[in-house]
Image (tube, rainbow, N blue to C red):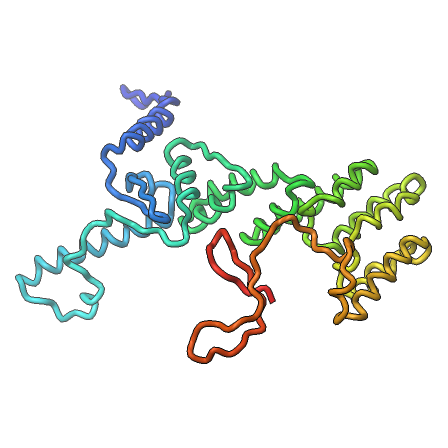
Length: 333
């Protein structure tokens, strides 16, 4: 409360909550909505004032449209029915209608719905299945508050189980700090695992990291963390790795350089088998074992070679796979 002469200014701390609650009720009942957003064919009726107050994208869009309309109205009044020859009039659309319908390209309907929930309630429901869509919408619409909440959610969710998924999202959206935090957390978390938990992580499908080399390096870190009590587990851990999936140059530079891979007979044999696999690429189809099988339990529909449609009808040497999510064929190799 502040006083100025005979006047008193009193602040109501509940007003903002009451206002937001009222706007949410209007939105839920679709009252006084003045714009319709469409994403992936789904429509959302909203209020321009709410959108513009939270999104720089909408603020700029609605403001520029109002300027054009106002300029157009002034041009009509000053011309007395005669078109103006000013070059600036090319930017004016006197007959432009108010923006009542917007189709948002690149925005998913799920992501947009969750973002709108936040605008009208200050709450956003996030999961690892939806956070990427929310991030995409928040960046397109320029709503930094939601981007910040999404990044914080990802940082809080980092674990061995979802490390790979979070790193993929972080790379897609340029979240360098999240990627660094995930890498740091993974190393620290792996070092605390016991032998059984370490085996379970190496056997997991899909694996927590992108490459077989990364799994090997994590195993080495775990063994080196307590050499006296853990090093005798090296052969058992190495048997769980698929060295044939590691490119030959990296086998030489990154794997062979590790001391126990040269000194332990079991590890030596695993490394030798992988190198022989790479030495004879044209016979790899005859040498398939668990050590050369990709780490995935996902089934894919492949299209190998064939005659593509078109007038040329030349045989193709492409290997394609069907992306079931996007309903399209993509080139594998």
